[in-house]
Amino acid sequence: MVEDPRERILREVEEKGIRFVQLWFTDLLGNLKSVEITVSELEGALDEGIGFDGSSIHGFARIDESDMIIKPDPSTFALLPWNNVARLICDVFEPDGSPYVGDPRFALKRAMARAAERGFSLFVGLEVEYFYFRSPTGTEPVDAGGYFDLVPPDMGAAVRRETVFALEEMGIGVEMAHHEVAHGQQEIDLRFGDALTMADSLMTCRFVVKEIARRSGVHATFMPKPLSDQNGSGMHTHQSLFQEDGRNAFFDPGDPLYLSPIAKGYIAGMMAHAREMIGVCAQWVNSYKRLVPGYEAPVYITWAHRNRSNMIRVPMYKPGNEGATRIEFRAPDAACNPYLAFAVQLHAGLAGIDNEYPLPAPMERDVYAMSEDERRQLGIEQLPGSLNEAIAAMEESPLVREALGDHIFEKFIQNKEIEWDAYRSQVHRYELERYLSIL
Image 1 (cartoon, rainbow, N blue to C red):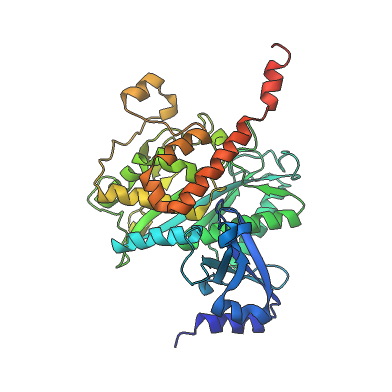
Image 2 (image 1 turned 90 degrees about the vertical axis):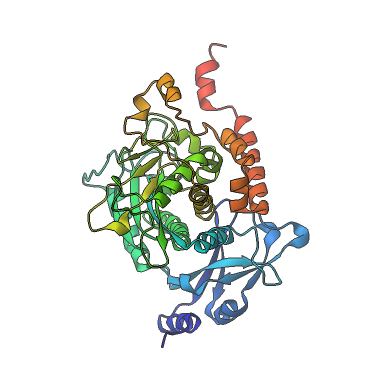
């Protein structure tokens, strides 16, 4: 007989001497929110949830409709690797018990339900990049290493290793971890799982990375481009659709690239809607400092087999491993709200499948090495070059509005317009160094 999840949690809390439980949820921008309760309150929280003031959470309710309830998802129970504290990830509800339309986790659940109506489940694996700096007030890297480097003494490797141990203790699978290209830059690859679990895992990963770094006397940041002369940090998002019988819907043994018509439609949808959805997948002003030519980040809306200069890459198929057939979307960064990012990607891919979008030819040449005229002749489009441009494209998108829902869509755009106005009104060091003495 399968044990009831609620009873399992209460039993484990007692057996392990857990004294506090943190209830986590995510705001509009992907910031982690939490309320901590004693174990004496846990049973009530599991049954009825915990009330809070939604008007104090960014992008949630107005002050005249502020009452909200968070209710834990029992499947997310995990023990934090310090201080006898556990955590549960929560969904947000209205007082009448209906899901709150401003909850990013609900937006992803709604997108996954749409895929399920077609017999599909979205599975995702992530390459999560970030930096270790010596302090939170500067950008001095902890090392001068490069890709796959291991040069003792390597403080970053030790902190990264401890982080991987902590994630695995919490039930989050890690495929590998290594030094990335830039000084002080790290990568942790999370083993693939369903999209909701993976979004929960990324929120946990960001928290654990930062907390273990803090305890180790260094600062971890997921800022997409903290160093102007080094590569930025991305989040290559591997994804595939699985059918109800467990088969990978992206695999076709008769295709030269082993890609099914479903996979090709999904890629075509991602490409067709790339400009309008990138503002959710790369949601900060700083994200567009990463998305520039010359630093390995994708700029052009192309796809290819193995070629890493493209926005979408199809990793090499290994015979006998059809379950690993997938696409790799290389434009997002790990500072995004993963619930919203996965929701818009899934909607774009399904649109390509449903409407049989034609797939452009793969681009096996180095797109960066082409002239602008060559790219124009080949019909290669470019991702937006700024947050302002990205939000303008998003604002005109029925697909992104449908994926996020009216509330999140409008609040998100409103916030990003405020961010852009604040950014463009600042005088930056570059302007002072370039113009002050000569103008």
